[in-house]
Length: 510
Image 1 (cartoon, rainbow, N blue to C red):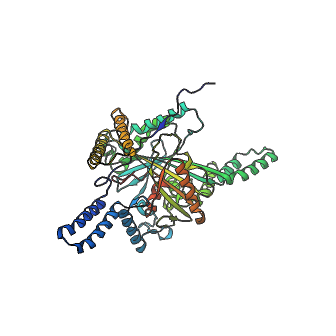
Image 2 (cartoon, one colour):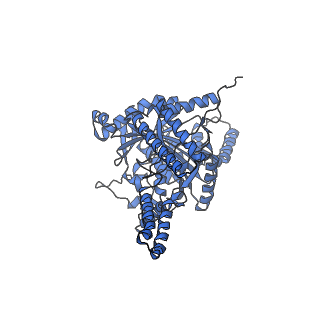
Image 3 (cartoon, one colour):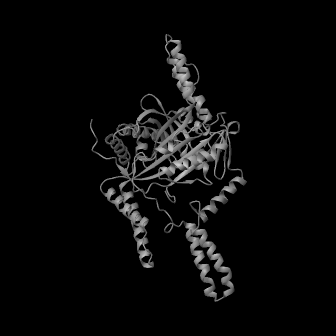
């Protein structure tokens, strides 16, 4: 018996992105503070006590709007979001109707019709270089092309620390390999779903593989076992999405023929180059999704009940004698038949989803398995987790960290001048920022990261219970969650779909 001498590695030092206009204030917040300060000095300039009775309360209100917090948002951001949502409700833009109501082309075809920000996406069919077809999601606004694969991973919980550390380091190597100057790959997204399974696919596979000579008693016992275990089963689906930026790879795309054809060819070439690194990270690629596979991943997120029917049909389609439809979903039917965006809930087809953004990662050191509680099996709900990474090149990383260091130094000098003591949280943030810069200088990569969670139920009465359970599991993992108030449809597109969306160029917070 051998004992591992290497302890389990721990991880910490995540830094929240600071992109305020001044300090942590947005542009509107800075305007409110300036207006409040000017309003406060008006009575002094006019030397009028009567004007002070009016101006001082107005100044206090403006400052409260700038610095007040409502469920994690500043008061002014909350008001802007609420007004925008009410306008959307009044103009019925929060409703989406597809199916028979979807627009058709001149040829009578019904294109993939998706709600909200997903309406801009196009699903392309490209050769994968191995004789098969690959579904590529094209975003013409961001000029990106995304390929999605379904992967399996042996896990970290039941292995020794040496192998656990090796697998995590291999994943780090995969991410660091993309932190290069003007790299074509602009985003890597990991999406995992935990969803109830009634055992339909298992029963279909078993029926096709039972030997005709099997004893009747054994077949009966197997049927009873699957009937009792099937409804209690939970399956997990894991997807890896790789996104290419056509602006960064414009020369390579031009050399490959230009346009969408050239972009797809460059993306396929990048995918083939990444496969050895993906394999070294312990990830086994089950399949690169075809257009029908991408459509199925989208459809089953909007309509969870379709998952059961598709599982049985896809399992039956593996039979060489199958004469039915192909596996997957027709891209024309990928979107929901109807969807409605409410203030804190997103209703789509026969399900309700609440999405959350991770606003704070653990401040203490954690093990690589700290996210496991988030995907615990639940029979009343399905959960989705999306981790979106954006590699940053060395030059941009150096400039970004230097800018952050300058902001922290200025804040420290301001605290010293005003006599305010430095808190322990601020001191630790400075130490973590310095350690991050030291690691970058030593050759490590720097990435932007965002994490979103979604919980979906098919019974509205179980929604709040499912949300409470998710928040409890997130608290156990050391995460700080914030409900995506007023933007549930946009959050759903990131948290519940494996399309590699998220991480805009500029945003406030992580």
